[in-house]
Image (cartoon, rainbow, N blue to C red):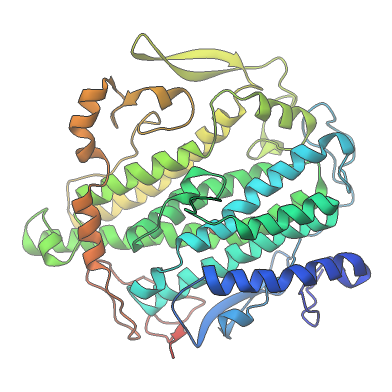
Length: 470
Ligand SMILES: [Fe+2]
Ligand SMILES: [Fe+2]
């Protein structure tokens, strides 16, 4: 299963054995490169210390080295095939998984792949200008690593579209390059992927909260009965772990620096001292968490139920669940707002699968908050950060018609408007964060608003020349 790098498109799917598919992907490749040059990282670089996949096996899959970014070897890598794999859930549970797309699920599967595929280049577009204000060469390198891998995830989805969905799939692959984040005429499909990522605090919040939604979506597709999709997602999840790491440790370091400045100057108002106040960090958490929750869709969803029953999309860690994996007899509880109060309703477990996934995600998000609060505690700061209520600031699902405070109280429109500046980033917050965004490109140096990392990348020190600028 090692990867063939002598090919124009590196791959471990024996692309050379299917000339027609190979030609189709080779004709998509220049369009991808044009997209990368026009919509990818804006900062010119000579080379960047990047990892490249060399094998999809458990050990030693990554190779590290300085490469010119436009020469990065994007390719098609699927996790190894398990010849005995069987469908783990739904009405065809126990039957062998599919190596081809069953006709009756063609349009649903294509839709799922297009939606996932659309998020990958979107985040590259959102982060396009961040290199111009990187707080250190270490951070700049991490940004570019995330960017090239999101580009590769686009390749992963485009491969599936080309290989299994015929002319329709090829047209969708083109459209993935034509929609752009924030574009008025042809925006990206999901709301959170049309928001700007204008500063590095937003970037760390995005990689913590929004990339983590990606992790959970990929986790459900990894369970799919359509085996090539499952294997693609399994390998993408390995790459995704680094994106999560960038977000988690990024926020760690911002919080650590703010705490340090608070103690040094004996004030919560660290803004004038070149830091980001905890109030502002909290409001950024509130924003990014709530828009990411919207990505899970409505709490009750017949689509989610149908995808599950058909075997297209499972639950998070489906095989570890102790139930019948069919769920026709099971019930679940979802939140509702009744007479202006929060309440719960019992519904069929099948209808509540989006809610089930969102609950797994929320649990995972809590781990970051614990970490960041430990940083505060260790520094001797009493303030704590928290996740707002799931109903706060929602545009999708049961809460979208209501105003819910971070503490979980349903309030009227006036009360919401009067307090929103306390809960969501204000123009002044954004302007302050923006004012701190000055590039630091000298090896071993770091911007005022963030602490240096504890470790470098791949055993290299923090002051390593991770990026060479022209
Ligand atoms: Fe991705
Ligand atoms: Fe990612």
